[in-house]
Image (tube, rainbow, N blue to C red; front, side, top):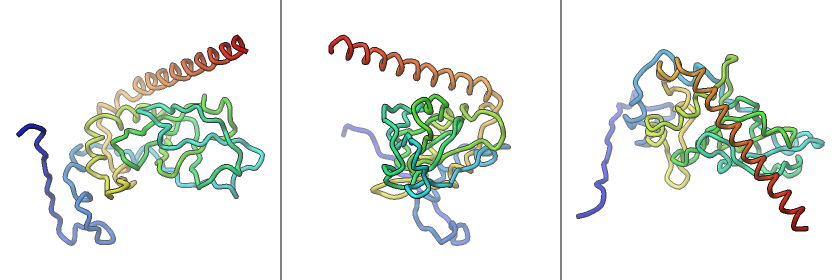
Length: 224
């Protein structure tokens, strides 16, 4: 018979080992979730997960908001041509983000909706907010989190997130999985260079977007 052979994984847990609430979802105890080993630092040691939310009532009625949905984060970079909206158009609660934050969607992690938030996003808006499907990672210290983006997209981490997703129709992974990810020493030691390269890649993306917008404006003028 042709095709690929499906591989089933099995796990067992004692009652005393079940997560709070006696969760029985088999995905919660998949051994792949612990396949990265142990290191001195975890993601939770390096970041806060932003929980504060913004809605129509708390938003500034005089301000403009760029709203990022999960589809706007594409393998490391925010890519969107959306126009900012007013407070009245914020249809559901959102999370506020700041330059330097990293966002990662908890919904369908296989889509790799991870991105660093760059200051250029504020060029046409007062505030940037994102869907609550995103976890917003904010550095505890002063260093850049850019290095986390390619690591979160790397195959070993993606395998852990895939194993950790729970739910059939809208599979998600919980925040504890993210906090407990061990950051390898090699990734930590190269964080400065990796962050600089990530920032440069985002800058190139913004320059490309600006060039395209300029070409469109010129074509519109020439064709008018």
